[in-house]
Image (cartoon, rainbow, N blue to C red; front, top):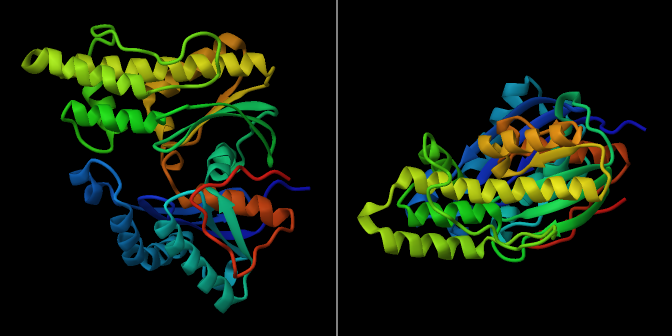
Length: 336
């Protein structure tokens, strides 16, 4: 059976990006993303009510743009796929409501997609080859998990954060340094040319665990800022923070890949846009003699391209959802 099938219109509104995409098979024809980063920057994080309101304003123009960029009409679409779990319920509801309306009016199949499955399948876009089984590091603002992917639809979480996600750690420490939002991009930019060994920062859990902990890093940076005051070298501090997060993510992923005897390593999620992490994991994979695959930067942050891909996979399996599709703030990864 083919992994992917049909022409799928995908929608993603789980947090603070409004996105629509058109995908045929595994070929991405368009992927329009309307970011709310400028809206939430003044608060230093996502405000759910503001996110939902912004989605309402952006969703129809984004859908129109995605269809136009792909040079297709709704009559050419085989199914509508939409993120319905997990995420901010108010934000999810905007995308799901739009998807239901499109599916009903145009008599199209409706497919609810788990947000993390979208991330896990994002390396397959445009026909990229990914070996099985492989170890996937999912790193974003809300998630940090190590997932053994035996095949599409066969997922096992083998490690995860016990407190903050990696992206959340970037956001919180960037705020402490007086940098911008989102924190991952701000830390990466500030760290350029900095000394990553200048400040000693904790790596969380010790030993051969596959879990992560980033709450101690935030506390350590707070104490560092209070101690150093105006003498703090922000560039070196940013480089030290980035090194603390990147090193533990890469080391634990390599350990998981060895422990589970995988055939490759993938990196997905918003934090996958961090260039230092991409380089470190590629080096680790090379040391293990394993291929390393990560999606292009525009498929790392929340986007509808990956949701279209996951929807295409489930369309190929003959799966459909009804117009009673629910939105869920939390949900386990689906299995086939």
